[in-house]
Image (cartoon, rainbow, N blue to C red):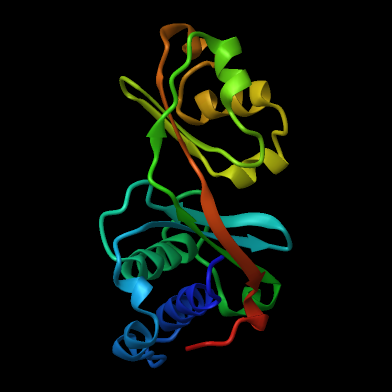
Amino acid sequence: MLNSVVLRIAKSAILSELDNKYIFDEKSVLSKFPFLKKDAAAFVTLKYNNDLRGCIGSIVAHRTLYDDIVYNAISAGFSDPRFEHIHVDELSNISLEVSVLSEPTILEYKDFEDLCEKVKPKVDGLILKHRAYHGTFLPQVWEQLPTPKLFLEHLSMKAGATPYIYVDHPTIYRFSVDAIEANFDEILPL
């Protein structure tokens, strides 16, 4: 289970972006929580009154967990191309979620039906890759798309393909997440 410090890092990163006078001590945090120094992939999700407000993350670990959370928190709040950047007056209605991903593994399957049987609803996050098409769904997306068929069809559309792409046997990766969420106002800053 994730330590609430990951939420505190994400909140502090957002606050520092909103007000450059807000500073937090990276060295102190890293000395208290050495797991943050390991490379890991994380997503940061912002919701405003339970509606998506920003979501940016890494699929594969390529920097420390600390750096990934800071970068993705700022990106989710200020650089998600689907949304305007967040404002101070929204913070009381924002919830913040940090998801740390396991390493993705290839999911072998014969056909679409076999793939539907192999995916684990509410557990698996999936990555679809095929030529120029690429899409990712975190396991939390199962809340809106509860069946494997719906989940996979929408994943293909998110990737920019049709739901029939599975005939071409795209590469599918599976991963899990360790996630923690809280209302922005309830998270202690660093």
